[in-house]
Each structure stands twice: as C-alpha cells, then as structure tokens.
Image 1 (cartoon, rainbow, N blue to C red):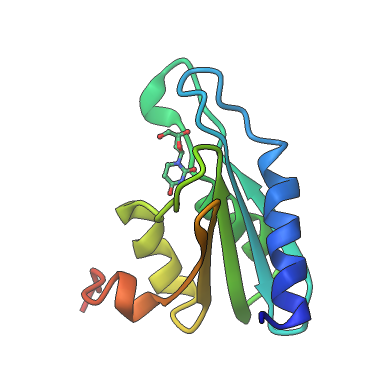
Image 2: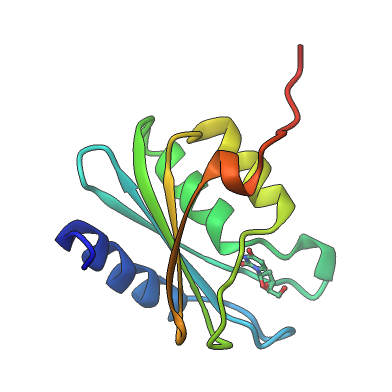
Length: 129
Ligand code: THU
C-alpha cells in the first residue's frame, strides 16, 4: 500500500492531466511534483503548431515549482492517456536530475504503479565541469 501523501500526489497528477494542451498528438500527460513540505505543483504537456516547441508535463511541473522558489522535492507522479507507463523523456530526466536528484518518480498506468529513483532512470546526467 502507498503512503497517503503519495496517493494524493497521484490524484493530483490525474487532475493535472486534465489541463494538458495536446491537440496534435492527442497524448495527454499530467505530472505532480511534491515538495519536501508536502506542497504539490502541477504540470501538463503543452503543444504548439511548431511541434518542436511542445513542452513535457514533467518539466512544466518542475518549472512551476522552481519559479515559486521551491528547492526541495520529495516525489513526482506521472500519468498519461494511453493506459501504459509514461516514462519521462531524456530531456526531462536531465532536468529532474539537475534540480531534484533525490526525488522518487511514480509512474501510474492501468497496469499498476512503478517507482523509480533518478539514478535508476538516468545514471549518467550531463554535468558541466
Ligand atoms: N510528453 C510528456 O509530456 N512527457 C513525456 O515524458 C513524454 C512526452 C508529451 C510531449 C508531447 O506533447 C506528447 O507527450 C507526445 O509526445
């Protein structure tokens, strides 16, 4: 059984997904990011007719929290539309690794819930020396 704060985080990721703007792919993604103090920030994917500008839910959640001055994060939940696990893309993994290397990542699908650490998902992030 999951802790109640993680259950809440998962519900929030599903809420965040409702805000997705995905008219081109039809693939809606929601992310919810919980701070160390339990505050939750939403992110959703935001697409653009210039398709390369499309923005992922995970980075949207992170930016949403960072611009509010948040620095410490506990967990992120990610949910998509297709009933399968939505693994964060490489760009999102790089950005999560930079700002929240200790965060727990929960992927929610119709098949169940998977939990990962960032070192598991992205063992060799780019770092500028
Ligand atoms: N997308 C995300 O929001 N997160 C991911 O981890 C992978 C992909 C979005 C980008 C685009 O709007 C849509 O999913 C289809 O690729």
